[in-house]
Amino acid sequence: MAGFSVTFSNVLLTLLYLLPGFLLQKSGKTRAEHLSSFSVVLLYVCGPAMFLNALISLDYSPELLKRMGLFLIFSLSGEMILMLLILLLLGSKRKEFGFRMLSIASVMGNVGFFGMPVVRALFPGSPEAAVYSCVFNTSLNILAWTVGVFTLTGEKRHVSLRAAFLNPSVIAVSAGLVLYLLKAKNWLPDLLQAGFRTVGAMSTPLCMVILGIRLATMDLRKLFTTPLAWMVSAGKLIIFPLFCYLLVLPFPLDPVFRGSMLILAATPCASIILNLAEMHNHGQALAANCALLTTLLSVVTIPLLGLLI
Image (cartoon, helix red, strand yellow):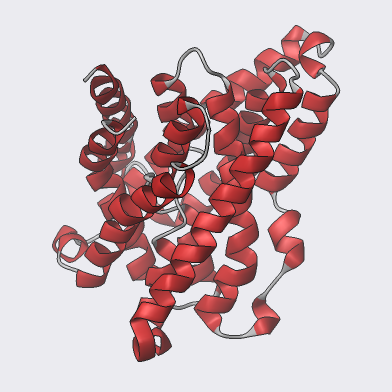
């Protein structure tokens, strides 16, 4: 039950970061049209700093490098297999945009800004848990801009290998991996490492404040009464994490690896779902509903799934 308590308290704390954004928007102190500026800061500054800090703070280990590679394979495989299974089960319904989004949103989670602090709290003596978050985020970006965007649009012209590999998150993880291999922890100035740590720590609060502002602009009745959003929530918060956990269970992997896979897979829908919807000017309301509903429900689902660890 200690794991349940730790997970519940940290997920609840993360959700409480929604409150300032919600109240500021409701009181007229913020404007929703400015969210894109906050998102740019999160995407290009805070997020990369968080990923860099997670990687450079570790001591080099060939065994850990091997586990990182395995985590990439398992996370990418879990996302692709379940997404394809959902599409097959949908049959002719996959021609509808909402159901195609269901297949994507059910496997793409907020593994960085939301997931990293949770696995760090759950495994305080295992800093590699934060690195697994970086790896999962990399697999998510690769999938989103290739198979994901093709599934959403049905057109190959929207597939972008450039976007899959040359985006702030993947670039930051790649740079952090190089620094990790160069054992940067031992020679990078303490002041610079502290800077990465401080700016990176802003990521989760900023991400949730942005979501809080967005939540304040929505019709809450519609948020809780959209059937497809509930279907996405079931897929993302229950089916996908259990699927990933069963995927790694038969292999001789340590509890931190398995636990991180389960918890990171159980995180709410990633903001990249909304980004894809906005980019193609279709399904923005549904994407926002999915992100917010799964975020609110995760305070219950993640701690319960944590009992499996």
